[in-house]
Image (cartoon, rainbow, N blue to C red; front, side, top):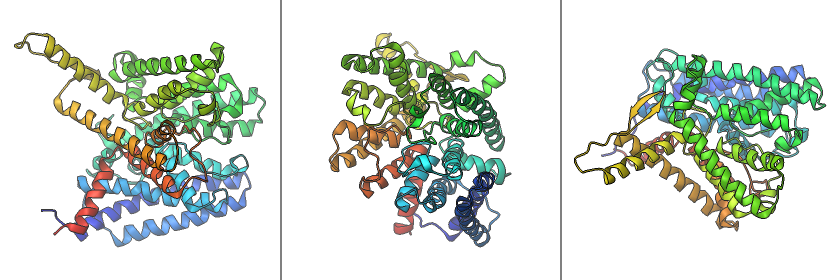
Length: 500
């Protein structure tokens, strides 16, 4: 028998959702300060309106739903899934008010793309967007990469055991430190340190390339936030191609790879345990899959002869591959070139890289490399059982910060999530094919949305049907949260309708 949700459940969900909304409202003060510094008064007004709406909604929920009770697992998952949807609507308000988005749906599309660190865009005339709105686009990507709930746990929501329920609901099932709040703060510490270093590196490189210092460091900060959070937004419509700099491309590759690594691995490296990077199953699997997928891309591009020199193959082929595998979405080619200069084999290589993604507890989306490593270990274990005598005891283990024995529940979980992503990729492709796009193109774009990558072969544009826009929004949301919290809210709605 399905039990109907109680009023108390709704109050607890509303109270903590209100707190997260207030946290989001607080972050809108950053573009306001930037807008005042750049003397962009109209954009500042856009954010003042947005922050008023957000504060009103947040206070309304906190006051009307005030409770001292803690979250249970169901409530925590629902708060997470709702917070991302609400963040999309509130984050889209200043974007829509700027006049650079044709409709509020388009602004919501870009807001979800930002929070989910995807990078697909529908913005119009991006090259003339204000500094203030451009900063907000990249800031929401930075916030989404660390996690909206991680922000709340770091600064606004403290001292309750339900914190871990929300933390797990945001597809982060690994605690770096014993306390979840301390874990959240460590994630922010890592991000801010890299932000300073990455902005300096990109800013100085931009100056050497002829950019004005202020513009160069602004671009550097924006590009870093998009690269480390494997998002893919950029201040210019040409993405990384705009900079025409190999040094810029190499630096962004390093930042993208750092963003694709597990924050738990970052912690080990910060603590001086550098051997972990060579022993960890995630890094070894990531290296193997990068090598395998780039081999496919290189063979495909060699067949068509699009990039005859090694340097060009690196800048056009390998860059797109790393951007895909880390889930970033930066491009050094135009979207249409995927269809003109690349053959199907090369596209399949990029598709495979997108579908795999980076490490768990990182800023990436997709299936995740740890799950691929676990599935491979399970195949290896089964092969040993077939080859070895029946009485032999076969025990497989892997190293992930510590030695972990391969248990059936780990394999089952990895296979279920992998299957769920494959189904999600396929469903989006079916919608794309319904609107007349070829199978491989539709699958490429669908995987890019669901795996939170942001590479595009040209399907994503303002003129695409609203149904396809909504499909990609749902894919970005579901893929970023890795299904469980999304399934929980669906079950909650079914219980509300059919429960007793």
